[in-house]
Image 1 (spheres, rainbow, N blue to C red):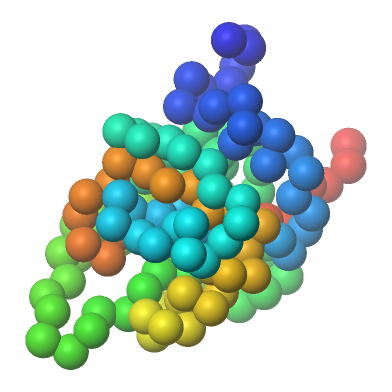
Image 2 (image 1 turned 180 degrees about the vertical axis):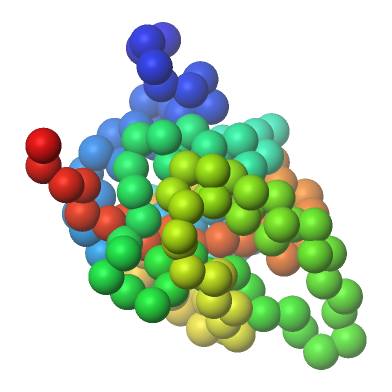
Length: 144
């Protein structure tokens, strides 16, 4: 354990966050996401829900302020229903850690998969709510 780092942040995830550059993307995937099919760097966070991971991650790094949408989620497929509480719970963490972050962009399911293939890493979580996947674009950390 390290002082000041949330215990939901595993050593492997901490290493990935350290190695990511600005503009790199990190997928926080729900438990049903095809992580291993989409990306060669998969980090396990089984049993951990995405809001807790978001809080731990956003305490350590910021989102990209130079793009219109540094946070993306999957669009709902026709015929499915959207649990608005999912995005609301994510947004509460984002707004607390990085107020002023632009609205979440919703992207088509297969476009989301293609984006996941190019992401720095996919974190497989214990999130079981439908349409719980989220992509974060890392920003530049200002030098003091």
